[in-house]
Image (tube, helix red, strand yellow):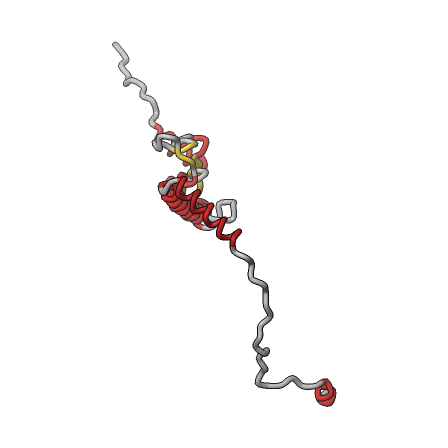
Length: 158
């Protein structure tokens, strides 16, 4: 009589996760997976294929309860601003930097020689121009509608 038993299989990761959450007294519907720092706030690698640190690096992924994760995402991530606010700020800075670089490259496209000659002409004009002497205004100072009261009138009222 041969005893045939089924072959033992490896426990799938999703089953391990369910068991671990049950041991901690938390259900899967009560948790969120949190990237720390948020993906949008990380630098990209040179080929723009992944973030640095990597997106699925286990050292930068945390399990958080949904209210805690919502607080970090929407209110305060420990830096005084939310992840969403920090992401919006980073996008705004990137956009302004791109516009600035575009303006600088347009200036460079005009040619260094042209811009240098314009600069030299401007400096020559500034040197040639004599500064105008400062003059006081010739008009009288405006008089208010109500004349100031003398000190004698102020003493009588009190």
